Length: 442
Image (cartoon, rainbow, N blue to C red; front, side, top):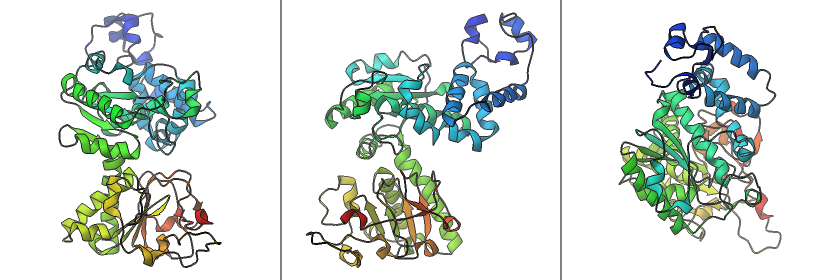
């Protein structure tokens, strides 16, 4: 056991030190535990057997999630021993997809505080509040404002489960000691009416502030971290798409910051693209790319992809012209007036040739939408497209000619029979994707 001055009940109440029934006789004598725990010394394997027995009595993954979080609150070592005994079984319970349901019900299943909760009402005192954290050497802070949790939207304080779960993966998968990790929720309100009227909601019952006010609050937080935890990397997680990109741009050249949704997704997906190109015997610079979804994840991947294309000898402008991005409103092209700043470099100029030939106007004054299948891409990338963004089967045989990749799409329209064509799906569990480009316009 790690050297500690804690003894007896105080030690048993510290999940980072408590070993429950695994304490040796010598440890029981040394730390005043005789009589406070059963008079046995069990191996971790035997403890794990008991955990699995108790988990088998749970009916749903949410119940198993709650059980495992309770285990973490009491015996950190046994929790991580359990998770890593069978990662394929337990990671989907402690994180995605079960974490989504846990976040939706966060205020209702809440048991014990984990991490820190920092409200915008505490502006001017952020540095002092950070000093309340008991660990003084924090290396990673995973922080969210709950603005866009997974594919579920604005969950406000209910999104606090995401940084908690993500940092558990740091430990379980990368071996980062948990004492160096700090999950944090920045509470700037929520626009989710359901939670604003829920008495058990654990955040501010106020709507979100203007962007300038939010960024001023985040500025104070980021600067306070530099003083209180000078060796710390700030991991932004599940902010809204525009905030994710803009905050990364705001701090990346000044501080050690990282955004998993923008940079992590891009890195792992580009790795898959590079290996897919090797399998196909092609080069990235010679192919065209169809993106279904043009939010922060899609833009992050497009930026990194184009840097790879430039490294293969094409200009940045040529690289960007090979990327065709579709969002819920269609192709990103030059006549669109609804695009944000970081989407504008991806506007296509030759959009007219992509207009659907089978579109029926039904008398309305609307032009034909662009058909993504007309791009004839070599790669199709699904990047968290919202419901309604689907791929039309039959207009083009994308399955046979594309290396298809998908991030975790929200409620995608899925049909069977294409799993063999999917070379790489980071975070996705989907087969063939379908895009009904005309359905919205009829």
